[in-house]
Amino acid sequence: MKRTITLLLTLGILAAAPIVAVAQLTDEMRRDGWVSIFDGRTLEGWKSNETYEGFKVENGAIVGFGGRNHLYYMGEAYRNFELKIDVKINNDGNSGVYVKSQWQEAAWPTTGFELQVNSSHGDPQKSGTLYNIVKIYEAPHKDDEWFTYHIICSGNELTVSVNGKRLYTYVDQRAGGRQQGDQASRITEQTKRISQSGHIALQQHHQGSIVEFKNIFVKKLPD
Image (tube, rainbow, N blue to C red; front, side, top):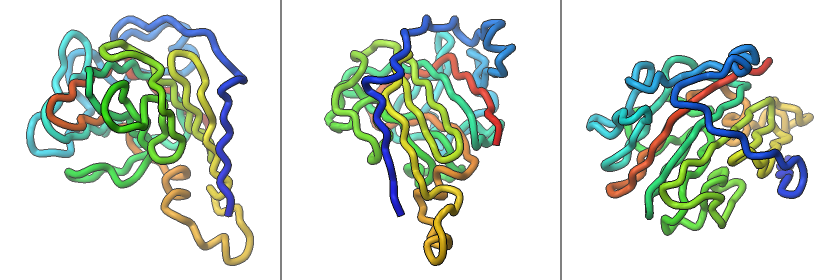
């Protein structure tokens, strides 16, 4: 079985797009099928996987604070989709945006994929990283600076862009059981992750880390 990572660092570079106002979709985005999953005022539709408070809404953004916590969007599970989200992290902060994750009580998510949020924390994997799969060692933004993730999950491909610049497409050729013979039944956990439906989740990593999320927009793609 073979895994291919196609890096598009020099191809398909897109111009940086302006940030959309808090919780507002443009008419063009609506026509194109985008919806907002955060209303800019409350955590309606979202659920924390820890028993203590760790997320709040301030100034139109979801703010993560305190110890480890993960906030899942429970309104829907997505298989093929696009996600756009604006993120800001403080100095020595660490966080992540999860896709295709299954709900679980407490602990670090064990399913789905994490898109790292980290500009200066000691973890060498910085923002843009598909955690432990495609590693980015130089952050594409500064501390306390808003940046935009654009994540596309389609079939066995996961494409990551930051601030309108496409970084890479991760391709897992095993997804969907395409292998022949005995290999067809050897579906690994990695294959399950990329082929399954799952929730979008936001991470609060540790005490002292303060992360903010706003403008959380999703567009479904054909299965």
